[in-house]
Length: 291
Image (cartoon, rainbow, N blue to C red; front, side, top):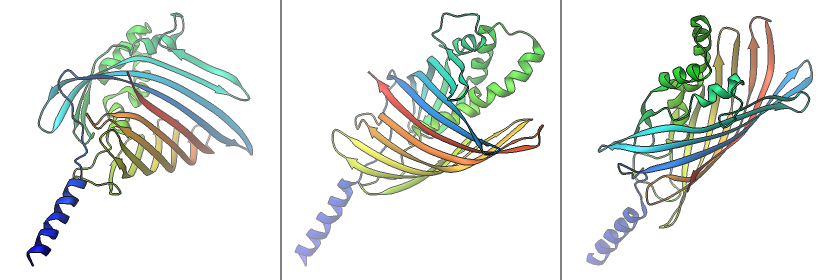
């Protein structure tokens, strides 16, 4: 009986040791730089003819931990570079904007320049869930100032569109796509857990711990997704799925690299023309911590 009891204790101990509390382990003063590269291919069916738009994005963001509480971290984020190329196989280059460009006559370049080095404050739980983002309004104001836009009517109209990408709510959604990966409870290799984030891009995620060693943690994810964009003239409603592969540094919980591939399909309604266009969006996004 004693032998069986000891075996039982040994089994429980082994199971306990195999489980790991996955979370961010950061300290005040820690800082890191994230490079994002994204490629998006949009295909729209125009009366049986495919019109293809290709978007290529480069973004570089710097994060610094400025406060640490029992359950949360406060970080200051600043954009260091933004570049976006929009092109089409049939139409050629449609736009090419770069915050590093010396061309100050290009309004898009100046808008991107306005995003640089403006601090945004992020409060993040240790699971990666974003509790709040503040400072989005400062980003937008800086963009207007950089581009020399001071007409109230133009600012009012443009602000609505900019808030969809750089407002605090939109930034919360964007950041959660790269931070919100950890479960509340300890897990072992092979365990799964779920979470979700909502916004213009919403996802219900199923995560799985596939490797856990002293040198490497790997997490895979699959998700059902929806993409939506609603303004006065255009309503886009798409649904689909995405796959995520994450390599994590065990020492601090930060990712080394994230790769996300996804496809969403549905319709885009142009209300003024009373036109509904079948739309498909394929994307691949990578995030890397720069040394």
